[in-house]
Length: 135
Image 1 (tube, rainbow, N blue to C red):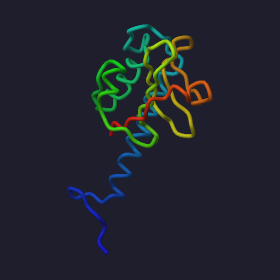
Image 2: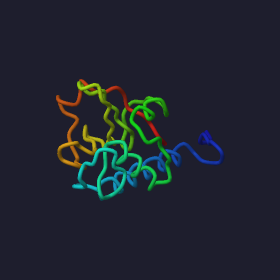
Image 3: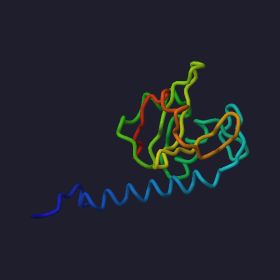
Image 4: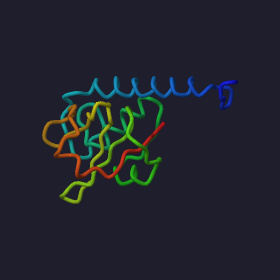
């Protein structure tokens, strides 16, 4: 039986490319650990949540909208996998976004601690709207 191909690539090659892309996104995101939170920030001197996500993906040649609300309207909802966006609807009425790292962890720009890796714990779980695939 011949492997299934899409535009000359096997499904295994496509899966490998996505896995590599996810690792590159994770590596890019982790270099910003400790960067302070700045409302409206979208640079290494300070990020808000969507500015952080937009910068990480842009450095990996993926253009995303600037705001969390715009991210909600774009891309497809999926079962979570490494490198996907995780979107939240917070009790304050605001939206929040992070990057899923696998093993129930995300990296995001926390308004109190800056860019951190955090478990998607009992605190975050009730506020998840959805996971979004970007690539």
